[in-house]
Length: 123
Image 1 (spheres, helix red, strand yellow):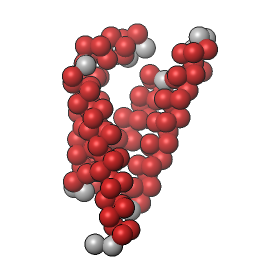
Image 2 (cartoon, helix red, strand yellow):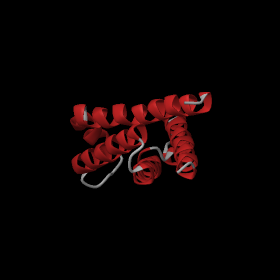
Image 3 (cartoon, rainbow, N blue to C red):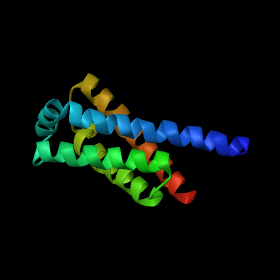
């Protein structure tokens, strides 16, 4: 295995691991997350938390295992885009601190979506 392949593997583990941990968090804290989703007017917040948690959990597993790579990354991208606009629409927030937090999450998610697109190109 080349050094480049080792670095890519470590990156895949770190990237996929992030989504696995966030997916597990969706299930471990689903009641709290559903309450937050409800405050953002997400329809069927409890179901949305479980579906989105499953999407990123399976996406992360797919990235790490290098199985169903494109499908896994599409699930991650779909999650990131939808969540960014529904949950982190900073432009709607009048509280400066909340606006700043939402802006950071929004652009972090856009960066992760961009990284996912780059990973798709590697397949």
